Image (cartoon, rainbow, N blue to C red; front, side):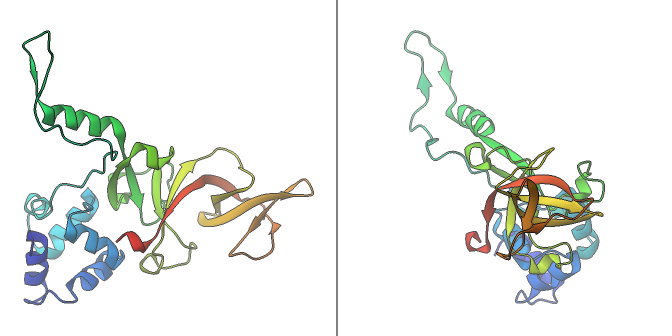
Length: 228
């Protein structure tokens, strides 16, 4: 049992069972998100750390110590060297740990994960970010943020899929896009028929895109709860 789980158990009157779901409900996130915090695979953002401090009645700094550092997923080819590297023509010995950290930094990218996009998007504050994810650069495909999937009226806890999105200033035909209408966000497949842009929802027939709909981003990758 790690530090965060021990605090959950203490907070839940000495019972760990059900504590993750109880906390998730209070924070309005999915239980899977709290589970990722518990396993150390993800780290709560500053905004959630402040909320946890209030819930646990702890100092914000002490809350940060409950969590292990966020896991960074480097390229598979980046394996630690068994011995320090030494230039044959010089006497300088290179520290493999420092080299490895530099390789991780160059080959990974940190993305903000939103439960839902703030109304001020593309401008946002740290409080809007649920977590920061560090992922291999080659797997991100140019994405700039992650978003919990589902229609705008779907409760966050019921929308379990996560989408990588890349910003787009215009429509991208034959792609799945995040679109906005009257401050509501939707996922739609975009196509063109008879010279006009149309969209598709849940495999239904393509229909004309309503007025005032704006393109926000292209879905470039999808992650489901199977990775948890």
